[in-house]
Image (tube, rainbow, N blue to C red; front, side, top):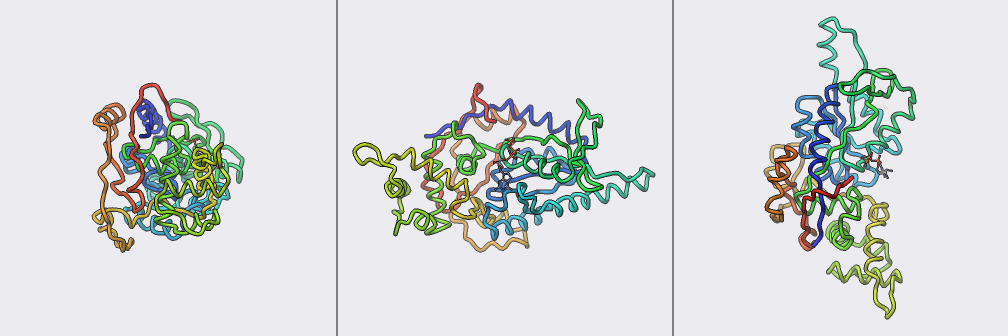
Length: 352
Ligand SMILES: Nc1nc2c(ncn2[C@@H]2O[C@H](COP(=O)(O)OP(=O)(O)OP(=O)(O)O)[C@@H](O)[C@H]2O)c(=O)[nH]1
């Protein structure tokens, strides 16, 4: 059993801060992790952003399976949201993103001009969960132009704006929101990519999750990486074989499992297994994608696993943070054997 501890007060605070900042901008750039675009979204996003134009940026696209990223772009577009893959570190996709942001603000700008208001730069803010790449994106955009436009009065405090190109401005502090945690599988996906700190999640279930994912979706990658002819189906046995092969042995020729779990997590996060996507729109329940002509659903949905929830979790969280209880409703193949994770809310532990 693994426990993710969570402090719902953070949700409420983040929500307040984001709501204030939203008043200052014309459009929102919602940053998600291209490898797990659903688990790395915040459940409050739609409610918070409402009718403000929004651009979904699938960041870390360099680490994700490009074929699946393409499907995600179509998925979001079919939901009426503009979406683009980016790499915030290298800046790939950013000129397109800035142009798209400007385009999204176009109708409002025209309306303003009709009222005699002088045209001005499109103002945007970046929103996303921790570790999704918000600072990297801001730094990358800032590096290009460096010039800050100076203070402009905000609602509660002065805000800095970063000028990007000649008619686009970015708020220099991102809005941080939290991922949804009710679904244990979501916790494991987030932990696998590093969005949840290791201290709050045991390494063993994360390593097992990774091995299951690789075995079901990216066959033979582990075998090739560790030069093993054939790994056992059972993830625990597979981990032992990998540990032994790598020479992680303790006194008495016993495999150091802890060291092997950490190796698997480190190498997965580091991209040593190649470009891997943890979520695929084709795994979504059929009704989720049926209304979407752009997304071809070829995979049969095998089953959906009920979410193991603490009885008081949903109520407690929604009461404190105004969050609807929600989950991704899908369990991709290979995740069924993952150990159960208990998700708990805690008043004392914070997740940053
Ligand atoms: N490979 C790759 N790594 C990225 C990309 N964008 C960000 N990263 C890495 O992801 C990690 C988190 O990036 P940050 O920019 O600190 O993320 P953040 O959203 O600002 O994180 P918080 O400050 O925790 O909210 C860092 O190690 C970055 O180097 C990307 O496009 N590709």
